[in-house]
Length: 449
Ligand code: FAD
Ligand code: FO1
Image 1 (cartoon, helix red, strand yellow):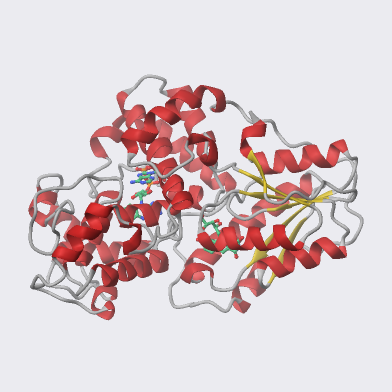
Image 2: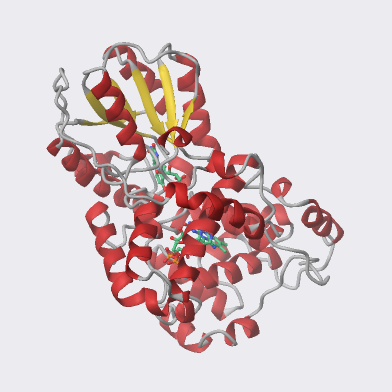
């Protein structure tokens, strides 16, 4: 099923010369269709193969926290590639410039890169495809059913994309081929990068520290998966909405940075728990909800703003723009968890201190930002800023879709009309108290001062 994952970004031919896999979203050796395709091209032509990663400055507001998790993972990936005689090279600077310079310098014959629906990434790929005279090929190795194949348009919700994905899943949910040691060596010398000087030199905000509780890397992602399957999956259905227990998988940072393939997760879950309702609930999130987010970001150019909301959501917000807001908070007050609501403050502190807010509270957290900001535009800007600054798994289609669901009704339906929210689904602390022990959660994330 490889051909359906491949999308040519220009109509230039695969020329003679080495092949480069420009790795970006899917930062792994195992279970990576883009690497498999790049190596197939290189083997056919009996030419060298290399992997490059362009380290961009200040990617979507990422801080030391996210860059460190990513780079520590890349060190491990670079080592795994070296074992396959495939050099990994880290390029610094504007990605499109660096790729074009690298391609000219090394007389590259083809550039393979991975799929990512985010605007910034498409701009990088489109500029490279325009400037190069050799083939630039995109491979979707993040989605089990390739995003462009699952649907040719923005889907209304999980209920419309689910049948399309389920029909195609048997064609795609298979084992991966494994890359082999590359027989033709890369000619020029390559320098291995050591991480500490790179981290120190990074011109990003160093005030958001690394987290210690989740070790980055491909191996660690696989370990986390094995632990979840052995101890968490069976009770996922009953515990995933309770932030006082460790009921989610904890996989999102590994999935976001591509250190673990969603398809690997689905294969292992299906292998160990083929029929449990808990496994089905988990696969619904992992496959349908996650691939719906890529669909939203691919086909909705306004995935991070109010214009991206469904028409009924835009209309509803316009009707309620002048409703009195009982509380209005500044970005500073949100950031420092200084609202009147101990539950919201606890969720904010969980995110700031651990880098991963519990999934159930993310809905409540974002909806309260809508309630306590002057306009829906402010709400979107504030939620995205905080989410992308503190979450390890931020700057991801899941985040833009999750925030647009919470604030704008994307992938949701209209509810009864109420002040400020209009027809957007409402949530409050009383509703949370019906789901979990709110006082216990608040106690856990008490301000430690
Ligand atoms: P699990 O419950 O174990 O789920 C496993 C995987 O399934 C997740 O890693 C994810 O890939 C997928 N998944 C689960 N729930 C969703 C969902 N609602 N939408 C899409 N995919 C889902 N997810 C991010 O990856 N990055 C974000 O920045 C992000 N921001 C969010 C903001 C808001 C306001 C909301 C409502 C949701 C957001 N989500 C985000 C989706 C979801 O909350 C997280 O994916 C999940 O909590 C990650 O933890 P986990 O891997 O332990 O989850
Ligand atoms: N991808 C890159 O190709 N180069 C980068 O420098 C880079 C930095 C980065 C920082 C934080 C983060 O969360 C993601 C980052 N990514 C980078 C992209 C990432 O791998 C994903 O492609 C998207 O964020 C998810 O679609």
